[in-house]
Length: 433
Ligand code: URA
Image (cartoon, rainbow, N blue to C red):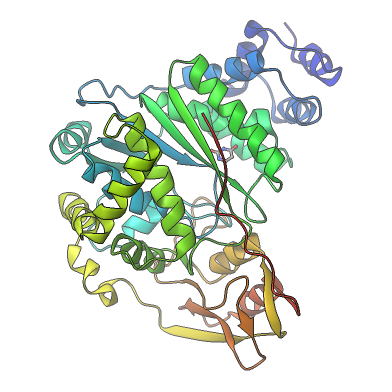
């Protein structure tokens, strides 16, 4: 087999067979196929797509390139959740204690942030002492005893996806449905869960910019999950502006605590409850979505959810006092109030630009090796639909950097204004199951 022939075949829009897909993935991981040929192949997939069988084959080739987690020592139905990536997405911090409170085990593996999107592991590490590396025995014991544990992704999980994702990032081939679907689903299959709930984001801060595209991605991933015997539900949710009011790390933890106390913004509370409800239905705790949603709302209102989050922090070695005293979270030395560059109603907030602003302030990484400042970030005082005059503060930037002018300019560019009050967007567009 020759890589050039397979590139040619895909360029003509023909389907590759199982062996051909495995040859490409293995060859690339083993450094037998060079970056320039893999780049050409990825671009051919971007333009010509893949059929369902090819996407399932690509997913399994990614899974087979590394280890699979064995969660069989954990009792009960293991349900995992994954977000296709957004800005201000602190929902895992809320969902883990919510789902665990309902008696469904959550054995969570999460990633770090890169570029304009944040990562759950970084956010949790902003809590003093919180350990995100647990040995296997502790991880399993904690899930069996407390129904919850979270760790960073093991380094040998889907190495093919890791290597190909890095290449996609620099060859403008990230936003391809077959490539995103196989990338996400391979990680979920390898991480060993029985059931999967996917949060497919749509809007300016997401890879999928339109609802029909997001639905197509959601349907593709649900089909892959089903074909590999994993019950899978995908929820298409809004990312036309960042979620909630906080983007960063420590400030997102603070906001997650507010949601768990029942004081969160509407968008993130609704989406967190929706995802957690589907997870608990798949985990067998409730007979249907409505029953789950109503009970989980009660779990929040009764204070149980926030107590479970405290417990999660404690069992992973962190200082749970932050729940009642958020000032114990890292605080930056400098807070810059940005005034509205226009007036009227906020008509749009470009989520990607807010994510880049947070990164410029020190909250994110440009390169994998960068060290992040947990206290840096953006507080969005005004969101879409809010009325503003030129005296009003739209955002507060938090940083320890002296040079923050680029961030101020970026955040101003992120906001658009109009004289007409925009229609509120939906939080949940579609559920695919
Ligand atoms: N998230 C992933 O894990 N992979 C993609 O390709 C896109 C988002």
